[in-house]
Image (cartoon, rainbow, N blue to C red; front, side):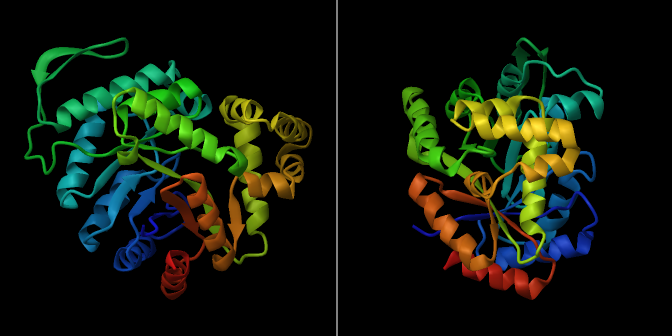
Length: 330
């Protein structure tokens, strides 16, 4: 089976729009499965994806991720339907809850119990994208006037990928989504976690083989400080992104490591947290290094059951970007 790469670009910060579009064009030409654009508290995801749609032909275009709080389900349906139209049917809806810190302190919205909000969002999104009238009565949303999207829809379904952590949320993902995006799953636990996901899909009467797992957290970089940057990100997720990632690592047998990182961050800030992320923990939760070593990690991930690799390429040079993709796909 051909290796499937999903490429993420860090558009949030100082990257120029022209550079991001050029990298997407090269990924398209080299057979990359999908191009993912994250969203935090900087630039939005959809603006770049619409621009990329005009310059590419085959690569699928995904939000990686947008949260289910700051946009209503109907607005998400509008934006994904528009992206799907502009890309001739290449949109992927990558959704998640984000964190209380972002939702409450940036968007000013109460962080409601996320699982049911995600479920209702997906239900409404799918309904509108099928071209049906919006009649829905749930815990968080109630509409009964029968609005529908006033546009010609390219497809009657856009694939939905969910970033979920807690077992109950992962079970929900297996029941309602087209793909699962696990985050900070240790390599040693990946196979068992994916088996559980596919088992829940089968129990829901779905074909597990038709669902995708996008995972890996692989960063290709030759920069001398690249692994320190990865350490900083892991420390931040453990210590500052609510309790979700911390609790997950405890649940998966890395409680001692997680507690050490959290305590070090609280006592010594970012530098302290980074220092507490050991080499072993760093490589268990992701991989950062040169292209050849990253390709070896992709092979390991495939053996664990990952079928769509999550890869970030730390370069804006088009030629190096293309060569790196070729290496990873060999």
